[in-house]
Length: 444
Image 1: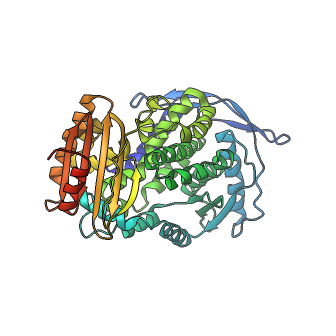
Image 2: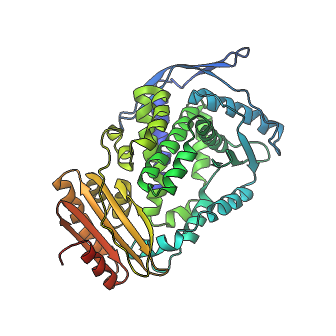
Image 3: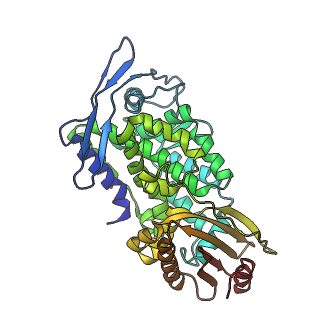
């Protein structure tokens, strides 16, 4: 199916599951105490096996304070107050302080997103060169332009954890039904960040080049907010649900559709896979289980593998794979990190297909990689350990097929197993590639 519909389909299935008995989550408010009671509801979608549980909870709700929010009509102000209450009721947590909310036009939102994204652009030239070396980007592509356009066109609102600010667009006559869903999503980000400080933990992972772990943590963050949005959708009438999905399908996704598949996968992963992961936690222990995951995740260590397979969470911890001490004259060592199961899945699926990629990446036990850049050329050394010898062989076979198909013929690529480890080397300069192979102690 077209990938742009992947998340929408998950939302539809979950809403269908949760309303199959006519049992949408119901809330009642005591105006004198500000307490909210949420009834328990557990249902399962036969087609997917997805179970959703709405936990019983009494949540003290912090009353909305919109004194600092400008540019709202009376209708939008009333809607926003209701959404702030709903986010707290659904998520089972009160705001510790009023959320900072900035409402903008669609054009202002796009400008804000592009400006925010431009501030994070330091690593684009090195990544651009690496992805072209790996055959994931065409030679004439520009990664920075591609991603800036994607985020500028696709983001419907965002939460800026550095300042705790929610930025969303609003129509002249108030929030549309889709914008209301986006607002619930972003409000939950602000709410959970106040309680668990996820933005600080996430930024530490990025600063420390724990990229695979950061990808898994982002899936928890986005899955949490998406699940809350799904539970909010349950409170809508059938007519409102129809409006929500009709408005969703009117979004222009041409920029996303034209992007390479590995980029589409990377953008969708935190939402669809993160939703299933967070929903599994919620089914097992309600929101308290999700809350505990925020605390445990940064110190496990965790991985995208544990999000892809929720039963692995806290159990199947990544193996530590040491790298040899290698320096490349004239090259800057850009990153030392972990590629991860999701990294292999998205990389391989673009070239060898989803089924082969999923099977090959499924036995991921751990890896480490170096990424170098000399201002023009890229080089990479990756060492992988599978859960079993069979897992290693499956990835080796998939990577060989990938290398023959994707890596430009004039470049250097090496895939082989030695001493129970799988080595993947790629370089724009064949001399550098051979040097890396020799430095790693591999036989030619």
